[in-house]
Image (cartoon, rainbow, N blue to C red):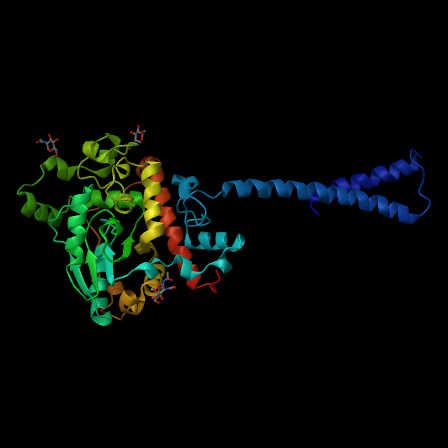
Length: 403
Ligand SMILES: *[C@@H]1O[C@H](CO)[C@@H](O)[C@H](O)[C@H]1NC(C)=O
Ligand SMILES: *[C@@H]1O[C@H](CO)[C@@H](O)[C@H](O)[C@H]1NC(C)=O
Ligand SMILES: *[C@@H]1O[C@H](CO)[C@@H](O)[C@H](O)[C@H]1NC(C)=O
Ligand SMILES: *[C@@H]1O[C@H](CO)[C@@H](O)[C@H](O)[C@H]1NC(C)=O
């Protein structure tokens, strides 16, 4: 019993004693009656406490209300901005584990129902990679895996612009081109392009994969990526010109604080107002439809989630290396068997390769990140959705894990 409860319990006891002393109530004849009286007052106390606990639990339940489309039956939406990155937050590996365990879902996870690979009808791995999510590392891993597991790697040339807002006719041309690259050999196809649904074109169903990253970190990474000398040289080869000096000396902080169009993240912003847009990774999952266009809008995010749930086998992230590698291995063994071993192979393994980090990228203050995170609420919702889904796939094959 808490201190408070004990004190009031003593007060009650004193009241009872006083009542007896001053004969305000008749003296119980047997001590049994006294005990009964005390028991009743104690029960009353416990009842009050239980009530309080109950209402606390109710409050917590409300906070965990399921949303319409969600990998966990939750949405990342309520955990925006400042909560992100906290260790007790539900969007971490541990947080998701604790949530699944406490709601009794952990033991019911079945990999079969989290496995879209089951629906593929040809050994084509379709990787419509999102820029700045570390896709080059995955490509390199897949080139090595190709030798081991017997498949080829095909990719679009660097000079090809990112595939966005293609009309149906163009989508059909692209699908035809990709599907005809190899007639009966297993292969991976890699290109920066929005999701395409292949069903209307009556081709066999491929296996879809992708990688994601924290939305704001990705945007910052893109900002400095386009300012690197190597990217400028590549762009020069394509466009025949360089940006001017103002462009190269611009900092991300200054760009945000001065409302530069390059760093504007307004609700509903569309592609026509903002060409060459790299602000939303959800676009790569939503597709080519006009609904996908306006920035940070629920319609685009709902469509992206639908496509993920229906078609993507695995959406990984280098923020969770081991989880991603093991989920890829277990859910797409035809292509990824042995991926973890290869990645951590002594000396030659990708884990020991110098990271593809951009030394031109300065550290951006948390304050600036906070300012823009608020405008990425839907993008975060989608990002957390994918992370929760990845974790759930992981726990489904590792139910014995204990944290
Ligand atoms: C530099 O280029 C930007 C667009 O990238 C343009 O708005 C600006 O006027 C240019 N500045 C100079 C000094 O040419
Ligand atoms: C965030 O969105 C609000 C409302 O759409 C807008 O006023 C503000 O300028 C945006 N912030 C940034 C950094 O784009
Ligand atoms: C990931 O796996 C490697 C190799 O099995 C191991 O050395 C490393 O500690 C793991 N990292 C984490 C964060 O679990
Ligand atoms: C997922 O499905 C593929 C294809 O049917 C199969 O090879 C793989 O073992 C499955 N993985 C899991 C974890 O069920």
